[in-house]
Image (cartoon, rainbow, N blue to C red; front, side, top):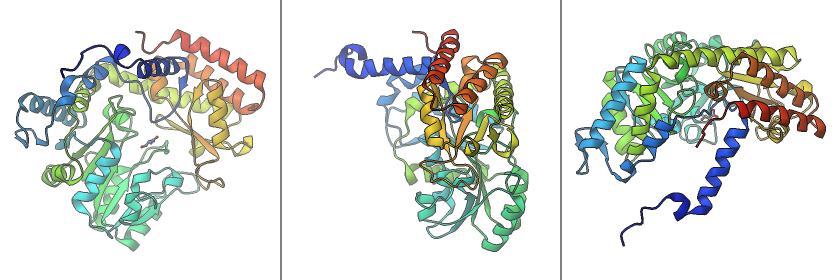
Length: 415
Ligand code: DSN
């Protein structure tokens, strides 16, 4: 039977209605999840195209399916734009996610049982950098480094652990670390013991592209990332590498860990990369960092402890111990006032990861939305109002009203 080419609203009104509700939710809430952002209509348009119909296992010029001449053009454009953004020697745009980008690097140079070293999840690292329940912690001998007393990466300990354990791969990168990472220092530590050096820049990629955060590209053998966080693209991943690793990385992605690439997503990545290359993107990222610093300062002034004393990125990690509520409760009460964030462990957290003593905030999405100083000051104070009196229903109601005033002024997706 020929498919009916009618609109989604007609074919599946149930799903359509839920999507509309989600649109309303995104419009009515203040989004402070540090790993989220709002992608452009152009990016979504590319992702919603008929490119989803096409199988294209392989790489441009060397596919395992016919009919790939236009697909090849798209993938080549995505690769070239990405290389230009980061001044990278080679790029692979096929990973479906950041986690798969990491897996591909592991698959390219490691064997099960090899030793890897990454930042501990409890102190700001990422699940895929060796956490014991993740494949990276189960299949490899995982050594973790963490923070010093000032809640900054303890490079002396990194060096000590590297010399002692001789990991085959050292990973730098984090998902709840607001400070600069000294990639050059990591590079020297890795080179001294002849280990591979990988940077997972998923959180910082947009800032790095705009020159607002140190660039790992000159130092790392492999750089992995997602495309949907600070980079503001579609949900997906990529890998940058030195040219000498292009072959092993490409075959680790396909046929190593993935089959057919998602060509509609790769087209959307290409569109996002074009947006990143525009001068506007630099202005946006400058404001992202500025907004995070203002938000952090307001919270600090309201007596809320910020882990590591502030931020140099889009991330703010909040310690709630003096407020006597867990991250889980704070997340849920903020949500009832239409402020969205996520609970997050803080260094030496006495609570279990499901509860935590902290929340993580981020400025990427609110900056895309158009918030600047005035709104950020307001947002900081509203968060503090909630955290000061989390169980006062009148207070929650008042904050929610104020949130509505701000969000009404800054609609995201109009039609
Ligand atoms: N889950 C992402 C984050 O929120 O940081 C990382 O993959």
